[in-house]
Image (cartoon, rainbow, N blue to C red):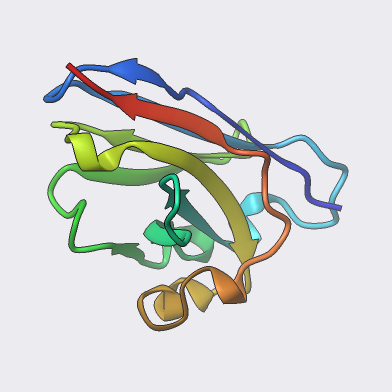
Length: 131
């Protein structure tokens, strides 16, 4: 079963950068490369929203409009990890960031369906952007 663990969050000033990691620590039949992997965030009092996603075997990527040009999602299959590089962070990027998996091409549905089609969520890592 896939078990996801996020890391890399922290406190950063506006304009700063963070790299979040999502590693599979479970003993699953498939590696993360088989799945779509999505990054989502949830700010206090708000719904969880999609941030970025990547399809199986790097078949494609999705970025929310709010992070386009500032974030890059990538895989490291040697470590069974998907990372999210976040640059030029803004106050509104504050929240708890989660990763989750879905079917190989389900990242294409992230904009319309958001977190509903993802599963096996990690526990999250907190990002605070503050001056």
